[in-house]
Length: 341
Image 1 (tube, helix red, strand yellow):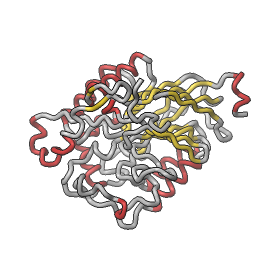
Image 2 (tube, rainbow, N blue to C red; image 1 turned 120 degrees about the horizontal axis):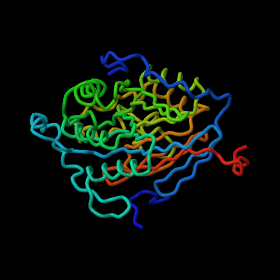
Image 3 (cartoon, rainbow, N blue to C red; image 1 turned 60 degrees about the vertical axis):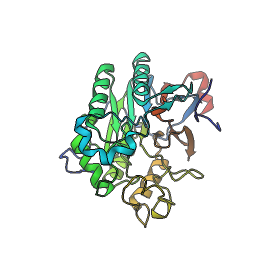
Image 4 (tube, rainbow, N blue to C red; image 1 turned 90 degrees about the vertical axis):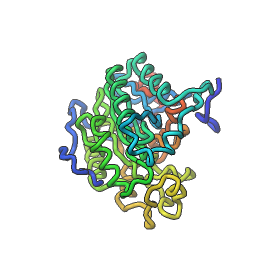
């Protein structure tokens, strides 16, 4: 079986939306008294997490980087901003079969898998769109309604970016979240939200500008203090030694000197001073969180798995090429307890 690169070598937080400080949560899960012990297995695009803290099976389907380019007459005034990305993913090669496919077909296939496998949650983790086209956003909403599975969405850097449009990354993110993407958040805060499924809390935190703000950091720390099992969902992977600049959240080399694509993407250059102190503090908080079971991300368009302080980060292949992750969180059987205790 051929597989494209899968294991080839193995605005401010409020952005004027008037939403509550933090999303409301189901408090049915009981806080933990100590660090979580767990096992992770990986085979193809299937991952399994096993732990005593998991009381009943939870399945999620993780999707990132679909890069939908659907548009209509409403997008004509924006074509000078959308032109390059509108042509970027018109035809792709499927990550398993290497046969020709395209983003809409790949997205529908991932949703169909989620429905057939009775997934508990669909995680849409950024760059679902190549630019904030009304037609593409409405199409995704309709497809999600058809499968009728709970989903969580967090934006990627392309979802809100019209190339060449003036403004800082934060300002443009806030503008297009409010004007186009807002329905996908289902009333939850666009920059930080939590979904609780059978005792596991999934946190969607928007790092699509590569940076984290103070309110997001406070939100994450509050979730950690709950002691409830957590899974972090971010578009841009967290920095890990030896990885590319694309692993840009908390990367000590991120900044103007390493920004090679700002002219191609027609946006402001990354700051000379690099990351904010808050972003570095977030990175430390993530990999020090005793109740965090893992981080799931996208952006790179290539599968990888890193581990820092025993916390696995899994990056999915791009959905534009058919990629997605099939993830199960499962109770640990008695015969396997000796593996981690």
